[in-house]
Length: 359
Image 1 (cartoon, rainbow, N blue to C red):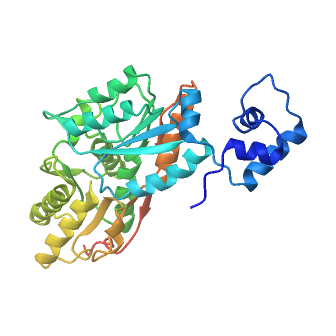
Image 2 (cartoon, one colour):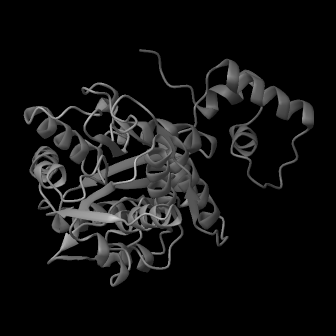
Image 3 (spheres, rainbow, N blue to C red):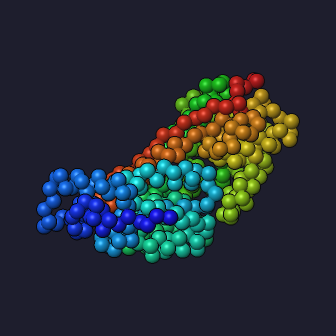
């Protein structure tokens, strides 16, 4: 392995002093006058020698950490890898590095925030705030504010007084419903979890399910149709795999109630793609064909949505745009600006789980 190229190596190659090279490469103000020709030669030589500045030395001189934190709920979330990939370019442009810290309950969330503060991160992009004693609790993130660390919330509405980036879930509900109405369905059910309406009473509680229901109800009533909302229990906050199985079970156990309902629904909109998958499994077990007997639309477009049978019509979230918008808000905060929150549109991906009704 070759030795790391230092400022002294660059200075020796150019024939100037190390302080002159440091002034040019670190873009520092100095009483030392450096001609344009010498400046150009220093930069070209540094590039030719593949000089990389020492992050530790730069941090020591500037008093900065050059670190950004991503506080994320659950490590196995499908879009986490996409977010990290998309963030890499944003961070490189500003000479920053990323620390990812995940959590799964209130205690681990507190510990994750404390670690980010201990690492002296310069800003944090935060996802889902977990529930403590049945309530969402943003208290750990208040410690970031007390430490003077800017915070942007992504896919949530819990942390007070911070800019946030969210999917427009009212539009999601409208897109899902309009697709089914355009196919000719008139008895369309929304299958969501039992806490969806609490968003009206508690800011930040289940805002996504609440907004989706508002979009669904608006589209149904504008079409002169009566909405029908059926709910299932909310699975407990556990690990990733346990949560997945609980949402699948919620879809399976809801199927008979939908298929046997007096209004004879021909289509169902699911809040979650996992719930939609469980519903389709139960329909198959009951010899009820999807979409011939029941059309099914899912929520967030998971990677497996196109792989189940039939492939699931679902909402595709602009994953990379969500995180790059969050990064842009964070840079503005770090630069002393006060950016406004952003809502991002989604796309309906039509697959084989929806079709025109038989009656």
